[in-house]
Length: 286
Image (cartoon, rainbow, N blue to C red; front, side, top):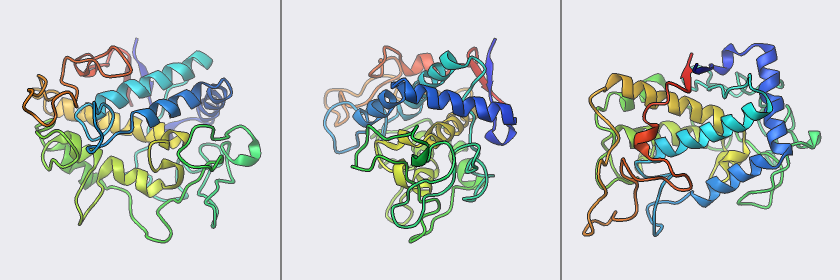
């Protein structure tokens, strides 16, 4: 029977505690840092040679669906009652709302070094040292809302703009496309509005959530659960439309060998986007 991923605002006190304890145990076992390392390795952009599977590419959504599922399985090996909750950033929109409470993810970083000093992932607790990173900082940092150059979180209208597009993705299948649900959700914009939806949330959180090592902030999972939920909503709204491209670009294409088509496996797994389009038998959203 499918288990349920809840809105983080609907978790009971016991569910909050068990989720945090499971995260800390996965970290203690060394498994969590492997997730960070994997994300860093696959954090590739348009300008990088070779295959892009995780970002600036059609497989952004299925890649992170499998990544999220792997983390959830790791948590459930610790505590089978745990699932990854989602953070609805169109509703909980301030630096003092959920999930930024002491019994969940802790609060904002302090002035100066942006170190998180409250909650279970604060350095003082000694249980959340950053071992895989793109900087020399070994403690969790945040800059909620970007104090020096404030931005706001995406709105429900921003989400609806992406969800209305009936096409999954379009050529040239990268960060420059202006049509298609995938990039409207992933959020590569232009000079006037550089970030939408998913990307804008990473920017709003700031600190460790910037760049390839963003997994170091546990909010990564709550954010991506909500993004995954939007893909599911898009699928339900546009039942006659599927993941694109259906077949690999030809040898004459600039994207030849650089993106994953519907029936090709995504590294580092032997799983295709086609196989990940419907996981309703495993989990559902409440």
